Every structure is written in structure tokens, then in C-alpha cells.
Length: 211
Image (cartoon, rainbow, N blue to C red):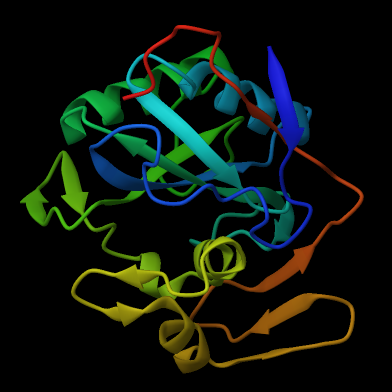
């Protein structure tokens, strides 16, 4: 069952922080550069929805240059806002399940992938665990995370780093009239909004727990 389309009204689908139950505010970053990229992002969202993870908003879709130095195609990226009372490791397991559903095979660090789902924050949780570092240790350097996140929440903050708007301004970047965000070689390449591409925010079935 699907609901309103996200990535449309610059945060218009953001229903607030966990207004359908308690738990932490969760920010997830999705990316794909293999196969049907948009379909992979949608599949990831559909698999993530429910089971204790309440998807609350999805950003516009952005096309971005790859990072890491590996020769590969451009990515489609989006950010999800969610709420959950699940432990961070359980959310990580749900992210891995979504990646597997999209056919993710891990063969090369920074290499191409059908779907990548990163946890950016789990509320104010701070963790130095090698299996799950929170907040995401490179989120503050990545325009493809910051731009769509800021689109959804103008007051977003990355714990330990500060307001997302300030982090974005600190990147060597300029925006242009096409909706692109042009970033320097030490950040994340060009981030181009793709308004013709849309993701549908899943809505839980009636009676299903959200968080």
C-alpha cells in the first residue's frame, strides 16, 4: 500500500518527529548506481517500511557524482526521515535486508552498488562501534546527504557537528539556477536535483505498529 509521493513540496511530507509514537528520530541515506536506480531506491523504502520503522518523509531524488575514486556511474540519492524505538543495530539489520532485496553484492570498497542504505543519525545516539558508527562519520562532508536532508528539515542538526545548513555552507560549493549543488573535489561532486523522478512514501497498513 502506498501513499503520497515524496520529494515534491520541499519538506511538505515531513509529519514531524515521531508524531505517531515515541522513539528516536532516524535519518537514512539511500543511493543506487546499478540497474534501475529509481526502482532500487523505491524497493529499499518498501522493504524498510514497517516492522518498527515509521517512515515519515522522503526527499526529492538527486543525481550525484560517485565518491571514493572508483570509476563508476552516477548515483541517484535520497534521504528518509523516520521514527523508531528499535535499537540502532536492529535498524542496521533492516538496512542490510533492504540492500539484499535489491541484489547488493559487496565486492569492492566504494564500488558501484544496486542499493546502499546508510544510517546518518539515530536521535542523539553517539557510538564508536566499528560495526555502526553514529552519527555517520562522513555525513558532514557529503552534499548528497546534507542537501536532501536540509530540504526536508530546515532545522536539522548533525549531533557533534552542528546545524546541517551550516555544514552545507562550509563545503566548497555553490548552488545554481538548475537546482544543482556544485561541490569541490574534497566533498561529493555535483548534486543535481531530478524533479522528474519521484519516490512514493510507503504508508503502513491499518493497525500495523509504526514504532
